Length: 610
Image 1 (tube, one colour):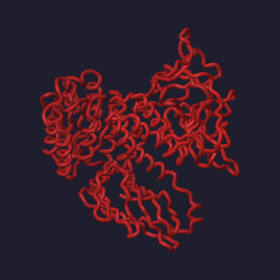
Image 2 (cartoon, rainbow, N blue to C red; image 1 turned 135 degrees about the horizontal axis):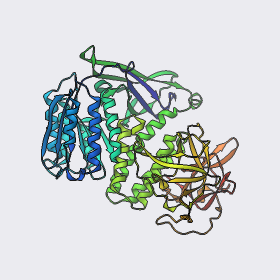
Image 3 (cartoon, rainbow, N blue to C red; image 1 turned 90 degrees about the horizontal axis):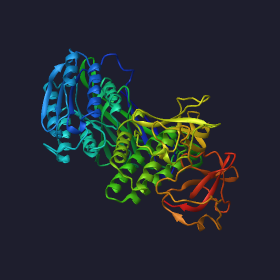
Image 4 (cartoon, one colour; image 1 turned 180 degrees about the horizontal axis):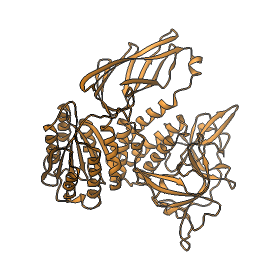
C-alpha cells in the first residue's frame, strides 16, 4: 500500500500564519490480483410488512446477484426478520447456488421490525467462521424503524462498535423513505462498514454491486493514521467523517478498510506559522499502519510520509496557484458538514437558518471555485434546490435522507457513483408546454444509478454528456426544449442557454404556470440604483434571487452571473457605479436578451454579507 499527498498551497509565504488543506490518498501498490480474500458474510433481510412488494422483490434479487459473485471458498448465512427472527440459511459454503436461490425465493413479507434481533443473529452466524484471513461482514437491509427488541439507537450503535472491535464489520442498507438514517449511519460508522441509501428498489442491485466490488478487492484492514505536526503547525481539523482522537498535538485517525478499486482519502486543515527562512520545510510526519494478507499470512504493514511545503517570499508564493483539485475535494467535505448542520436546524423547525447555511456555502463555493467541473456545478445546483425546498417548508423524509446520505458518502468514500445521489427533483409543471421543438434542442431527464440526469436527445450533441440543468424543474421521463446548448469550458458537459420549455403531445400546449408560492410579476425592468456598493441594502441570504460577482479583467471591472443554470462567460448589463471587485450581489431577477447573447440585471440589488 502506498500513501501520496497533495497540499492546497505547496508554496507558503515566509513569516506569516496561514491555513492550508492536506489531502492524503492510500492506494494499492499494484493492480488488484486475480485472487481475493475469502468472504464470510451474513445477509440480514428485513421482511416486515412495509417491505412487501417492490422493495422486498428487489432486495431479494440483489441478494441473488450477491450470491452469484461468491464462490465455494466463501461462507454465507441468511437471516430474515419481522417481529420474529428466522435463520433461513445457517452458515454454509457457497457451493450450491441454486439451493441458496430457492431459500431466498421462499422469503415473504411479515409483521413488525425486530432490527436488533435480526442483526445480532447475523453477527452470531458470522462469528462461527470468523477468521483474520476472511472478510467478516454483516449486511443489514431494512426499510423501517426498529420497533421491537432493542430499539435504543445509542445501544445499537455501541454494540456495533463492540462487534467491530471483535472483528465483525457491519454495513447497513436503507430502503425507501421510512427507515432511521441516523441509526443506520451511526451503526455503519461505529461498525467500520458502509451505509447506502437505496431510494428506489431498482437501485438495489447496483448498490450491492458496489459493496461486493469493494469486498472483492480488499487491500488492507484497520488502517490507522497518526498526524505528527511540527512545533509550528497544528492540525486544525479532520475534514472526513472518520473517528479520530487528539493526543496532545498529534491526531490519530481510523480510516478502516482500503480497497484496490477505491482510494482511501484523509483530508485535514493545517494551521501553519511559517518561519523566516526560504526553502523546503516539513509541516508534519504522517505515520500509518494496517493489516494486510501477504503471501497468505496476515501481516502488519506500516510507513511514514513527511509532509513537505516550500517557504518563499510573498510574491513568489502568490505566483503559485492553489491546487484546484484539493480545493474541490475539501470544499465537498466542508459542504457535507453544512448539510448536516442544515438538517439539524430543519429538524428543529428553523427552516430559515437551515436555508441560510446552504445559501452561504453556495456563495462561498461560487466565489472561490469556478464551475468548469460538472461535479461542482451539480453540487451547487443541488444545494440551491435543497435551500429552495427548505424556504418553501417542503422538508420531507426523502430530502432529509438525501442530504444525510450525500454528507456521509462525501465524508467517507471517494467513489463518484456514490457522490450526490438523489432523485428527488422538482416539477416541470411550471414550464411552458409546447408540442414542437422548432429550432430548439431536445433534452431528456432520466434516472441513472440513483441520480437524476439530463442528456441531449437532438442530433449533433453527445448523448453521453451531462447537461447542467436546474434541479427545480428536473422530473424523470420529461422531455424539454431549450433555446441552445453550449459546451462547458472544459468540454466535458453542456450548459443550457435561453428558455426552457416542456415538450408535450399536440393538444396539450399551454403557457407557463407560476411556480407554487410564486408571486405574479409584471414585465421585468433593468435594475437602477444610485450610490456605490457600500450604499446598497445588505442581505445574508440569496433566497430566490440570483448571485452576481464582480471580477477584474485587465483594467475593467466585469460583472458575471455565478448562480447555477447561467453562463458565467456572458456579459451582463449591470449598474457600473456599484461595481466593486470581488463583491457578491443578490439580484432579484436575471433575464436573457432577445438574441441570447447577454444578460440583464432586473429588479432590486442587495450586497451579500457573510
